[in-house]
Length: 448
Ligand SMILES: Cc1ncc(COP(=O)(O)O)c(C=O)c1O
Image (cartoon, rainbow, N blue to C red; front, top):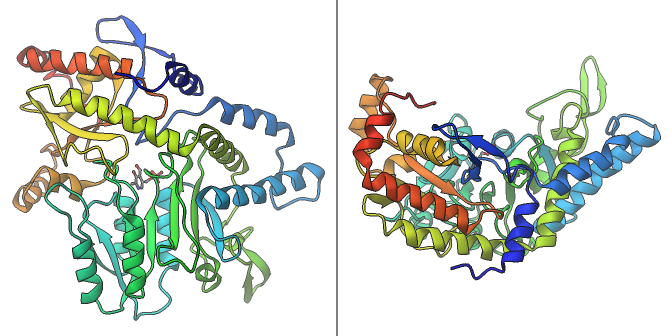
């Protein structure tokens, strides 16, 4: 089944650098690499590289010079903020676009700047977060975790229960837009409305959402307005070290920035500092203009394709794969098999085979890249695997014990049904000749 026109899937594949790279298998043959690890990072778009080439002759110091090229580079940098605002519907006046390295840096930065008073000292995170939207909050605030239902989707009832329980002291509800483990999308607008009802704010970790569907932060006066949004360019076909933190200017006007130095100040004496206004106050050091050019080009490419079309295409790949995976007897899919409200991610295991071994076999026998392990979301994976706290403690005491984990397939817009067919054929073969594969791969150590 391939109801998406073939010429369009070819067009999408042709946008990707390295889509025909040949890689070696264990038997010495070479095959075209298949990448089902797009949730970790995506390959670059050709238009992104072309834009970097076009821009490079004009590259110069950004916000630091009066030369023609320097002014052009600075203008390009500022123009990119407008492109991003338009892309996610950020308020043109109230919000500020801060460039950082990636989502992790964005959330860490926000964690230093978030709370304006001791009264609002609770952060509600969730039991399905990437470590990057959990650990930065822990050493600064009281963190509580919104519960999940039995399939691993967020419980809005529990969110409301907790918002009521903390009676106005929740500074922020910090929630992922889509899980990097199950692909489950969270109902961020309902979460926003609840957070605002209880006088709190919402942060959406957009790392797994923004590249895969259209997104609107909604007007300030809407109860569904998203207060803070973060995402990474390397997950949206622009791997040049840039990420974005969006939030109200007022939050970043107060206090000191976490990183201090060049570019952050308006005036300095040996005993006095007047900080610049945000976003500059929050962007210490020479800016990554090439990363910003790359991100801007990636956004324009995504917009040209159409975010709704991207979501539909990835949904099609998800359903196609989910259906076939379920026909393989020893495959166990985690979370649930419902493809609604989900980005193109599927976590699974093969019964009686370690996750690392499955990933290794797919790579060495099929040239297929997947990820295995806990995907920087250990509490969520432990929960999906029903690992009890006693087992976790055992592993803490003995670091030589392997981590429990899963195998993850994650799609990008350029993946093809024919690639899924290769995956399914190999998984069926592993399922049928499991013992043989185990004997062959048991002594090959897995990379960490
Ligand atoms: C949901 C989610 N949040 C945050 C991150 C961290 O992103 P980065 O490594 O770009 O900082 C990831 C990375 O996989 C992610 O999937």
